[in-house]
Image 1 (tube, rainbow over the protein chains, first blue to last red):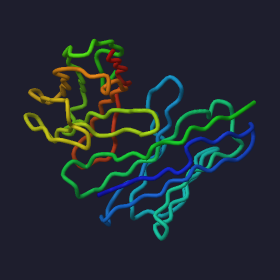
Image 2: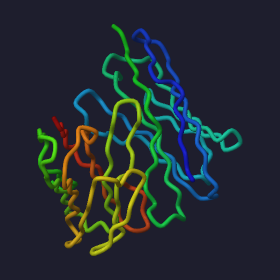
Image 3: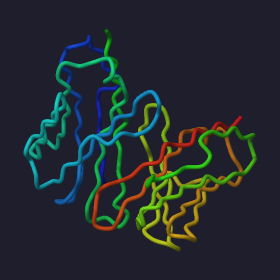
Length: 116
Length: 112
């Protein structure tokens, strides 16, 4: 069974600090997809990134970067020079490619608060 | 706008009442999902459907029923609401062979 662990329940930083959100996953499949979603106070889920298990290249998008390491089953998310607008709950999720449902399994989320 | 629409956005129910949440998508997606979100627990899968006329149980199916009579609609029913079903419900869909999930904006349900 697939599982996603986000050990950091809450993180608080001061604006302009860098922050890394941890995500550790478990799966027996060799083909799978990893995701990060942002949930701002308004409540909707905002897609940030999708990564497949065969692509371990790190990715950078503006102030956001992701570090995928299959050896440690981790898919960590770093925000550089954080801003107040980054305050949200961030979810890491996993989808196994071979299951019948191919559903997303979510971690419990990390509440990030960026203080001015 | 193409996407996933959830109806209603908010609802307050009394214990024992029934209701149906509607999820509609206009992207011709095969897969549809119902999740519930509770504080500190992330999103958990209630039921899912891999195509019109098919449904299956997810992680937390008790107390819910679903139907997918039309490809574009996935209904979630609560036959006898309980306070433990107070939650935010999200619907999602995705096409076959692609991992681009589209989420609705959520339904906040309170059972008193």
